[in-house]
Image (cartoon, rainbow, N blue to C red):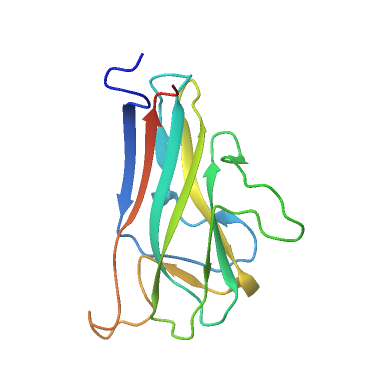
Length: 162
């Protein structure tokens, strides 16, 4: 029953880290277990909104990096996007740039039905040609005007499904 209106916020879970994690693979896989969030909904008839803001240094070509939200507990992609021929099925892509120090902030988002119990979710990625993608930092280390270090934030909101 809605207290104020429709879709009231019931719960929220947050993982935030400034850890630097690199990934170099053309196959889907977890970036780091530090990016996991554990969710225990209050109701099984609610909706879950998954959002992740993930700064990264993209590879220095024009291939794509791909990201998706993955259910570690059940071994499946959360609300997996539809297949479109030979295209990668992901929640958010990012494209490489000419300069390896350039930052891209990938916003990963999807909505799914709630559940009973507790489950663990993570962010998976893969890159074209197994190129290294640096998450939360850039390649160089000369100074703060040229290179970056920042935080990944992964939030799951539970809202009433009215």
